[in-house]
Length: 316
Image 1 (tube, rainbow, N blue to C red):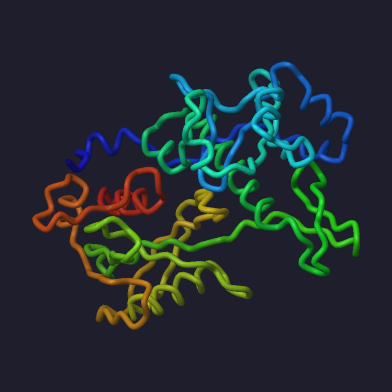
Image 2 (spheres, helix red, strand yellow; image 1 turned 90 degrees about the vertical axis):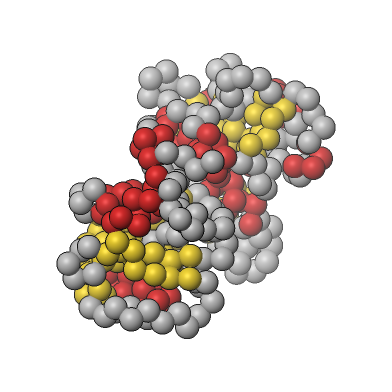
């Protein structure tokens, strides 16, 4: 059954609640980092390529002790320092495991949950979900950048996980965050919104348009280019509304609203399988789960939901 609008509004956009003190000026202090790692209360976030690994039981507790992490095969040389919890000073680290989900599936003492599911279930408070987003983006980067892009030699973790160094050629490599524009486009009167349906979404879901920024572009230019490429709609005025870390794997979503200067939709590439102008009545049906064709909008964990509901309630 679709969630009701009241139930949806009770949820909030995810991954914004990261309050960790990242102690960025101490990332080169190996002795201090070693002390933090070996503290009795230190917690280590463990992840496979797809999911986070929790100790089984309710409620879920973020992280494992150092001994438990090593018992699962965690490598101390590949542990990323996330930061200190401001309330307690507890250190939080993160690292990847070599095992696959399938290899850990029979462990009764473990529970494997992906980050999107954690957000949708509201299984953790924002102060935990935010650091997990940080951990997922960093872990993905380390898993996919173990070798120097300049000479091909194996690189080593440096600066507490915020750099990888090549001992062969001296190359230094840094984690990347990929900016994406995500935009709600309206007609001139602001009474209709342009929503599209990528094939990767669940059946019946319509959302805002989105796309990666390219080198040499402003945010506004990226919004206009991506909207034209995906829908054939030209856009004039663009406003930046909000932003959201989106660790799938390491994006920063830049939420915008834009005003269309043309209105005939032409889908020419393979980004969308459907695109349409929707009035407020239809979008309200999507939100409430009463749309006659079963159409719906994304859940509140995403900035797309915030943009659509903000327009629906005339806040953007």
